[in-house]
Each structure stands twice: as structure tokens, then as C-alpha cells.
Image (tube, rainbow, N blue to C red):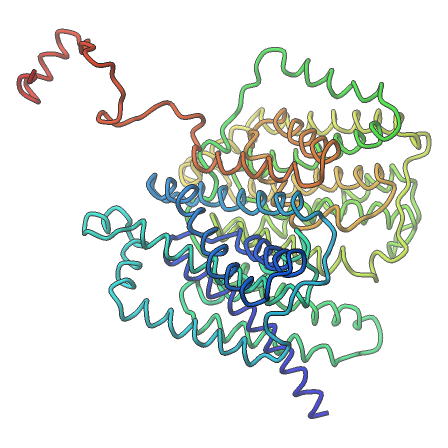
Length: 622
């Protein structure tokens, strides 16, 4: 028994050390730049792929490949992100709205790019940099934590770092090179991400989706440390790792066994849920760009064109029609984000969970496997599934009442990961489950017609939220929450309404998607999908129903017509541009000194303007 306890403790320390590295990297990046790096896991995944490619595919010696990956590639990614993505945003004021969209854009872009370059299949031949014994990893964690803590507390660079985070412009006036400080923080954070990736890759599934999500689950250790305390993050990471490992020895009989096994395998997810929902939030300011929730006016005739395009698949056949079946279903799911984000102005990074629950409940009801309810026809099962899932929107709507910005983003992301890990991925809920189509709509063409009818109903429901008192109240809450409260708007009730309606729409779309694919596939509702869907809706107009339909067609069409990952890469690039230019396309230099002027061109001022300039600036020098 003691030997088993010792072995499990060693295994837990190894997992905890990798989690501690993630926490250290996230905290350093946050303290240096004020950015909670959602792309941390994607950077870890890219570095793991680079090391594998150098060693396995190109035959490099392990340590030479590791040195190039960790000392050049990983920091280089961080410096490039700081220089070309986040530095322009910090100059604009470091708005968490823009940095959140840009960070998610980087995540989506790296995931899509990895899928394009290395394929979507899992790899099990990643090279082992450090053995399974945890002592080497613990030594790395101890050295990094002690070194970073000493630099932050006792050096001039640490004082400059704190000054940049507190007020970048004031620090620059005091002579601090804010760009250098931020670049160093990003380089170190990316280095720890790369180190985490190459350490974890030999022991977990290495694919473009699994490893990034696994790394992001352990963001709980950084949140538990309030994004400041390195020692707290390390202790929490090691404690969760050892506890998770020890739980694997418990095998209770009865109904509690699968649940306990799920908790034991996903204790970091439980910690993420607790940290996101219970502990004080990270970042209190709004996390949506002001332009993300604004109403987008469709050009004349746009709906006619959209209608024609959505009717075109009725003339398709074979694989083309089967692929097109996914578009209306995904369109309904994305309309749920229009309600929550576009209408309500709230972050929701967990909509894939509601879509997955909608598909799961539809399949269970159609199979007669949901306790207390009879077996139902598929269409009735879909309707009842929507009714069952809609109240669950309170689970994300309730935290939204007291949380905003990054705290709400983390809470909704944690909910999505929790549903995926504890429900959708569990054999006790999904084993042997299949999903058919409603009677009379078995063929792709007939089912596509049914989808168009359901999509039209969803569009009508979303359009109704724009009109009347409810629509005006939602717009007021989205544009200025404090002002809406002062005007008598019941903000908590409106937030719950937005999330409940969004959950119902996502469940409807998820059930439609499952019936279109004729199967319940948990991978179709992976938490990474939530990030991709959120980015797609934001970049194409969060308050635009037409934008949601375009996003659905884009996501399905790009991946179906090309290699998998193209859609994610395209959406990632658009998200980066949205984060960098949140007001739309550039309108030219704004400062007087930067405004180009033709040589010799006379200044054209009115007589009044000329007199005012003369009084303020004196005579113009030739």
C-alpha cells in the first residue's frame, strides 16, 4: 500500500509540475502585459509539434532540437505576438476587450495552422525530454519560480514591470521602456508554454485540439493565485496533481463509481470551475469590444442573396448535400451567441456545451434512455431537449450577474469544459448512443428543408429580441450597464434571459447537428469549438443574424472544401485584425504629425480658422 501511495504521489508530482509551469507562464505574462493569454495552450502544442518534427521526422539530436524549440522558437512566438498583435493594443490603452478577442484569435489561428501543417490525427511518438520521474521537472519549477520571484521583487526590471502593468503611459513618461518589458514577459511566458508542451506531449494525446485544451484546463492554478502569487500557484498545482493521482486508487461500488472516476481524472477542471465561480474575478472591466455588440446594418438585398444561397443546396446531391446539412444547424447554434453576445453584451465561451447537451438529450429521449421520460419520436425529442436544456442557461447566466470581463470569460469557459469532461465524454452517458432523423425526413434533401424551417423560427425568435421593451432594455444593458441600472432596467433578469434563450437556441442547433450527422459525436461539441464559434461571430458581427449565418457557411464550407483547419486559421486571422483594429478598417493616420501632405500643397483654412490658428500658434513660418 505504501509503495502504491509513493508511486501515485510521484505521478501526481509530475502532472503538478507541468501545471505549475503553466501557472508561472500565465502569471508572468499577465503581470508583464495585463493579458490573460488564452493562447498559452496553443503555443505549448505548436512547440511540442516542432520538437517532434525535428527529432522524429528530420532526425535531429534530441537536445539540439530541444534547445532550438525552447530557446528560439518558443520565445520567438512570444516576441512576435507582443510586437505585432498586443503592442498595438497596449498603445491604444490595453482594453481587455480587444486583448481578449486577439488572444482567442491567436489560439484559433495556431490550432488551425497546426491542423493544416501536421494534420488533425493524434500522434503518440513525441520524444521524451525528461523521464517520468518528477524530480527533474520539480527542479525546473523551483528554479523558475525562485528566479522569477527574485527578479520581480528585487531588481529594477521588476519595478519597471510593475510600473508598466499599473499604467503603461505613466511608466513611459518616467523613462521605462514598456515595449522591452512586455516583450520580455511574452518571451518568458511562451518559453514556459513550450516547456510545458514538450514535457506533456509524450504522456498525453498530441493533436491540435487535445493538448491546447489540456493546458488551458490548468489555468485554475493561476486564477487561484489571483494572477500574482507564484508560490501559491506552484503549491496549488502540486496539491491538485497529487490529489488527482491518489483518487485513482478509489473504486467505490454503485452509481458513484463513474462520477468519482471522472472527478479523479479531471480534478483540474473541478478546480477551474471553483476558481472561476467562487474566487474573486480576474479583471473587472468589460471584455467585449464596443464595436462587437453594435448593430450591423445589412446592405439592401443581402437577405435575398442569403436566402438564395441557403436554397441552393436543395439542388446538390451526394457528399455536397450531406455537408450542406450542417450549415443551418450550425447557424442556429451561432444565433445563440448573437443573443448572448450581440444583444446582451455578455461573454460566453461555453455555447458548445449547450449544443452538446441538446444533441445528447435528443438522442437519449429518442432512445428512451432518459429516466422518467418515455421514448419519443425524434422531432418531439428535439423539442423536449430544448425545454430541458434552456433552464441550464442559468448556470452561466448567474455568474454573469456579478462578474464581467475576463472573470465572466473564465467562468463560461470553465462551465463548457466541465460539461464536456463530466457529461459528454463519459461512457455512462453516451455509450452505444445513436441518433436518427425524424420520420419523413430521413433523406438529406428532406431533412435540409426541415432545417430551413427550424432556422427560420430561430431567426424570428432572435429578431423579436430586438424589438419592443425587451429589445431596448437589452441594448441599454449592452451599451452601458451602469446607466441601464440607473434607468430602472432589471439587469440581472435580462442577463438570465439572454443566457437562457442562448442555451435554448444552442440546444436546438446541437440537436439538429446531431440528427444531420446521424450520430452523437462528443468531438463535435469540444470546448475548443466554443472559442472558434465565439471568434467567428464576433469578427463577422456579433449583433448581426446575417453574420451568424455567414459564419456557419464559412466554417462548414472551408473545412469541407479544403484541408481541416482552414476555417480556424481564417477566423483566427480575422480575430487578430478585429482585436488590432476594433473600429474597423484603418482610416489613415490620426495625429497631425503623421498625416501625410503633398509637398507644397497649401493649407486650406477658412478665414475664421486662420485667425484662430494665428492667435493660438502665432504666425506661420515659411
